[in-house]
Length: 111
Image 1 (cartoon, rainbow, N blue to C red):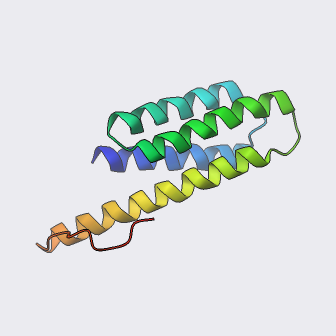
Image 2 (cartoon, rainbow, N blue to C red):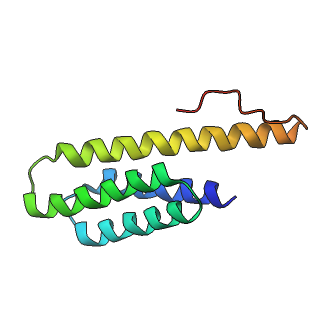
C-alpha cells in the first residue's frame, strides 16, 4: 500500500509539473521531488529514488536556465515516469494474483 501511494504521489507531481510547466516555482517543485525521493529510499525503492532525485537536480538547473528548454529535465522526468509505471504495473499484477489466490512467482519481466 505504501509503494502504491508513493507511485500515485510521484505520478501526480510529474503530471502537475508537465501541466504547469517547469518554469515556475522550480525551488518548491525541486523540494517536492526530493521528498518523494527520500520516501522511495525509505521503502527500499532505490532506483526510483535516484530518478526522482535527478528530477529535483534538473529542476534546480532549470532555474538557472530561465525559459529555455532543458533536455536534462525532460529526460529525468521521462525516466521517473517510466519507473513509476513499471512499479505500478508490478503492484497491480501482485494485487490481481492475490485477489485470485495465486502466488506471484516473480516470473514476469520487470523493466
